[in-house]
Image (cartoon, rainbow, N blue to C red; front, side, top):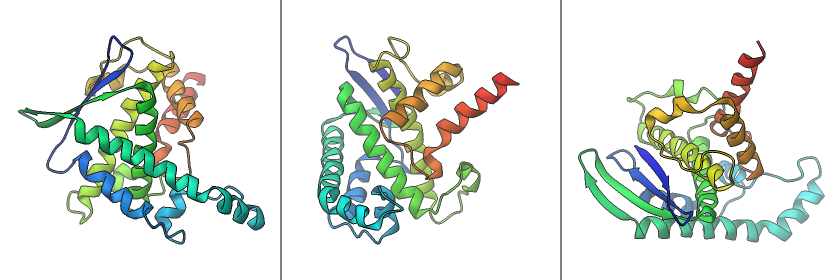
Length: 226
């Protein structure tokens, strides 16, 4: 369960349920282990830092020389911000498990999106996900089942934070109160706004797990035309 409400001050309160198979506070260390001493020949690191000049090796080397350290530092700072939010979050015990109550600003939402994108990229690469229908490959008997569940939760959380950020940018309802039932209430314009916002934030890449919202919006547009 994930629920987000906008505060009177314009910030956001996020209620995020944790379970035995999903716990956000364990994720920052996974990403930190990759970023502290990044091996740029590693598949995960290559996806986190995609080439800017795929057809110009000289330009790419210069780009990496000038910006690589800054790019790594930015991701580390984002990770540390999210980790700080998790460490200071209120923990509420409920019948469905522990719920984290996290206070976020509009700027925080963008940082969380960056962190979630990086974590989904990390997990998706390790699970060899390349297609949009990756959900169909999941099996509870899979030895990596916990990572599949985590990826599903991160996708769900990212969608809700995208929606909240859209509200902060004035692209939709003035107040959001999202739960499982609310996904069915999104209209075509809302889906397109989410996709546009994701593109603006630079969160689109060629990993299938990041194409779902765009694919949904395209399907809705095709249905409308037909």
